[in-house]
Structure formats: structure tokens, C-alpha cells
Length: 436
Image 1 (spheres, rainbow, N blue to C red):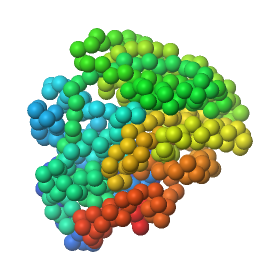
Image 2: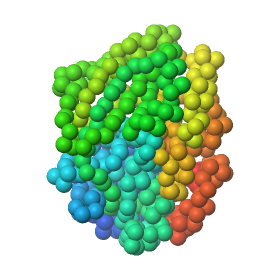
Image 3: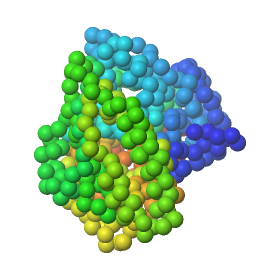
Image 4: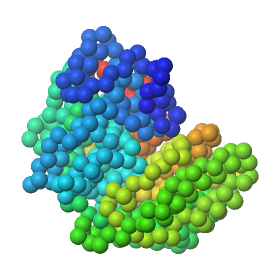
């Protein structure tokens, strides 16, 4: 977000910049004018959504295009269950826009504060071994190229570009419209409960394969995993939502207010962190309910943190997780934030972390007032040893030379970049590092 004085900083407080100019385009034509004007002045341009990336992917030292006014529903194709949205539309507003048409997004991530353009451009994903990340729902985009031209990419126009632009890292142009393939609205039956970590790890391949959506959190310094298993049901099924008071107590009071206090206490007295983790593991979970899919997939997170997440082949998740667990014990670190494990289906998108392989994700976090450097660096070594690909919107240290080895279509992506942004008007320091 942009604050008084013209300084932009992201939510995780890992990146900030004072752009030379900030613009708030409300139409595709306004974006075109901004890009053309910047190009004429030799200035770089970066679109910015909600600032929920922990990496520097959205840092805009030249012209910052704040897309908050480029929001809302453009069109609905009822027959094909497709919707077109303006690029700055926040994820949390999309369910209300789709509801009158009986539609829903097939899958969502844990947080819904991002814009749709930012979410797909950074590879945001949820969990479910049979479901891809949000970018796999994209069947068309309209973008402004580096030369200020409006380009449509879908199955009938420039179709060969879709595997690149659906997850384009903000390097190929400014998205102004996104068309999503939706599904009929559905419910999720959610079961959340703490279980013995050893049992969860033993059963992990089957648990991930058999459930529609499965993930777990592990609180370091405990032997407990908080499992979350969701089964898809038709919208006609009976809703059994959490009582409002119960939901507020668990999701707001305990998961945010009380947890923030515990994290702050851990920064003052690190030795207390194991006890805090054991307390956290005992006070969460143990609930079962059925509700509309967005209310189950997403959660409100107000405790500020920093995150690194790696995608690895699904069959290596157990070994990589055990290595992270052993690492924390060996180093004697006091880690107050849980480790998160999720899954995704393989997909054909060139720069997707799940490109061409069944994928598991391991995410590590630290409270924002704690230095994550040593912890993240050591975990990164483990992930790389297991064929890891870093989440584009989260913290990592890899450069173009390393990433080229991880992505078979890396050079094809760069060729599309040469075509759509030959002058590199959309570059920034992060893209220079990861794309060369």
C-alpha cells in the first residue's frame, strides 16, 4: 500500500520504495496512456495490487500503477461458466460477484486480500492434489504490452501465449482484464482436528490423494499436526456453518488477537516459545462444519509475518518435512509460527511452481519482528536438495541461472518477454534477478 509521503511498502514489511510517480488508472485506456507516457520518458512501470507478496516482485521505483480502481465484473458467459473481471478486483469480492450466477472459483488460497491479477501473476495456490493454482483457472487475459498496445490472449486469439501470460510475474505486461473458468457454486464439508504428527506423516500420500482438499500445519516443538480436510458437496446440500460467536472466538480472538500476543511474548522471551507452541497446538482445531466454499477456503490473517514457500515433487514432501523438523531441533531455534504443508495438481503453465509435476508445498514463517534470514536460508537448502521451486511472491534467494534449471520452459518465457516488452519497461530489481 502507498502511505503518506509517497512511500509504498508491502504487507509483510519486507519491501518498500518511494516511486517517482503514482497513478490510479480506472480503465484499460488509462493504463495504456500511463505505459506510453512512461515509455516515452524512459521510466519503468509496475502494477501493484494489495501488496501481499513477500518478495520484491511488485516494487515500483519508477511509475507505480495502483489498480484498486480497475475493479469489478465485466461479463459473464453463463453457458460456459466463465467470468471476466477487471484486473484489480480483490479476491474477497469475487464470491459476491459470482453468487447471482450460481458460480464459484474452483479453488482458493488461504488468504483473499490479493487482487486477481496479483494472485495469478505470482502463482497463488490453495491445496488439493486434484486442483491447480489460481492461474490454472485463467482462460483469457487482456493486457497492455510494453509498447502500450492492448493485447487479447485466449483460446481464439494469440492462444500460444496463454501458458506464459496466465502466470506472467508482471514481466509481460499490465493485466487489465482476466477471464476465469468457474464451476457451479458448491459447499465444503470441513473437518479440522489435531492429530499425532507421526501418524499424519505415515499416511500423508493417501491423505493427500483421497481428500478433495487436504493440508496440515505443524507447530514446531510439538508432536502435533493440525489437519484440515475438506470434501466438496453440491450447493443443494445442507449448510451447517459455525455459529457466529464460535467462529469469532476461534478465528479472530484465538487465531489472531491471542496469537499475536503470544508471538510478541516469544520475541521478548524466546525460551517460552516451545510452551507457547504447545499451548497453540492444544487450543486450535476440533471443529467440523459445512459452508460455502469461500468461507471454508479462506481465513482472516491479521498477525503480520514473513514467509518462504517451496514447491517440491509431491512424493518428496515427507522427507523434506522431516529434514526441516530435524533442522529446527539441531539448531535450537525457537520458532513460534507453524510450518504449512499443501498440495497441487501438475499444470502446463510455463512458470508455475507445479509445472508438469504433482506438487507439494512446504511453507515456513516467522513473526515479522523476528529476523528470518538464518532459518529461511537453511530451509531453502533443504528444499533445493529436493528439487524445490520457490513461490514467486514469497521470500527466496534464487537467481535466473538457478531457476532456468528448474523450469523447462524458462527460455520460452523469456522469448515471450522479448516480444511483449522488448524495452523491459516492466522490469525491477527482483525481475532482473530471477529472469536475468
